[in-house]
Image 1 (cartoon, protein in one colour):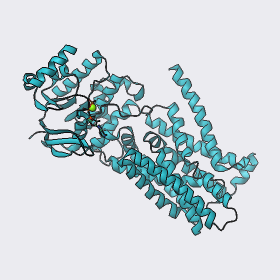
Image 2 (cartoon, each protein chain N blue to C red):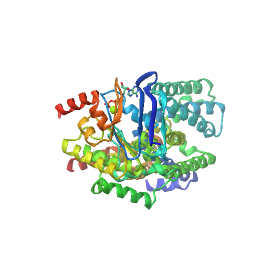
Image 3 (cartoon, helix red, strand yellow):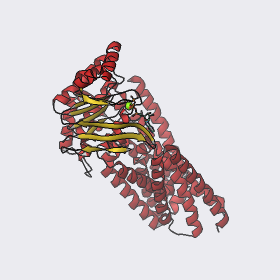
Image 4 (spheres, rainbow over the protein chains, first blue to last red):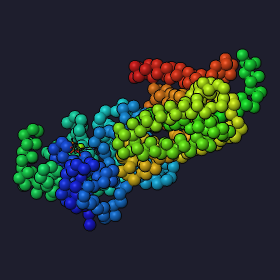
Length: 235
Length: 280
Ligand SMILES: Nc1ncnc2c1ncn2[C@@H]1O[C@H](COP(=O)(O)OP(=O)(O)OP(=O)(O)O)[C@@H](O)[C@H]1O
Ligand SMILES: [Mg+2]
């Protein structure tokens, strides 16, 4: 049994289908990269896996003891409004809500979890800072720490490096890679084929033609050859 | 001046009004940030007009205790508006505009046609701007006001962390198993209750000001949710109290005096915030 598996999944809004015939599975410890052109439905797939949207057909199954609320999530754009007054600490703590149920206040256990994850993301010194005044890279780290407070089983990251400079992008990839090495299952949307091929264990290509398989199978496939070469030339 | 104030304070009616005013100011300021940031301020505005319409019906029906009718109807409308707002953005906005303008028009019409009072425009004016109604509250109304504002404050304290999570990033909260729909629902009901309560203090047209100005003032100085919430509550209470005292001493209408003080504090904090931001 796998953590998440999709069977004949089709995605869309109202009556328009965005992507269909998706079949894939994610096992514990996997690092799945979802690639595809703009508008091919990657973010939609993420939202459907998170249960924010209902699939138009087929189904998504959760297994291996993974509960629906044990998924951490890094949204594509920071959804927080520009003016939101919130400190880093408050945001990271809010990730703990996933296992709070109806309990109203945080206890020492949650505060400790938040501290640990801020240390892990190296943002302890930003604790009291206002989120909206941080740089893009710092903001991503804060949201990652929040996601880690929600769960350490599986993280869904929607383009975590968009808008970051090459150096910070690399740091971010290494950070995500180290999380994966420490046992966190990763599902990441990325436009960076080279990084996908470097770090991922599996690749899901969404678009007119759909591919799902291990990284090596992808590189060997016709589509893989095409995209990896294109990515290679650009880099 | 002080003598006039002390003289007024001898009356239980005035003391009661001050207590109710403080409680209402406290409860109305708490949800301000959420209202502003979640784009619920439209709903707040629409609901205040609904409350006006229902109040017109209640006064025509000759109800002595109008809150009994206004509260449930406004809560129902809040729930309806939230539901329609969830479907599609545009439809939700249109529904709010329809309901709020419709309620305003019908309220005025009903008061004009059916009212037995000789001073219709005076009645309308006091419903819209609150004028002296805070000093003419009956004991039951005072008790209802006090009980509901205490409930709202208590609920806010217990739901504080959930409200933060749902306001900051609803998708994330939902995805990690927070019952966002339920909390949105509770927030909408709390807003409806606050609006009905505030109507007694500042009248239905000025309610939004009471809810939003303290939050905006706080947001221009402070940068984390907790400080913003605390400052909004404190400034709202201080403004309401000084507004009421000024209005007693100077004989100005209660509602607009309170809002004027709120605006004054907002302008003040705006420049303080600008100054701080410039230095940093
Ligand atoms: N809320 C929505 N309602 C209707 N259609 C939508 C909505 N969000 C996205 N779409 C459409 O669904 C399609 C897929 O969008 P999606 O955001 O999933 O693409 P994506 O693969 O994440 O693209 P990108 O690489 O730009 O992030 C697009 O054609 C888009 O126009
Ligand atoms: Mg996307």
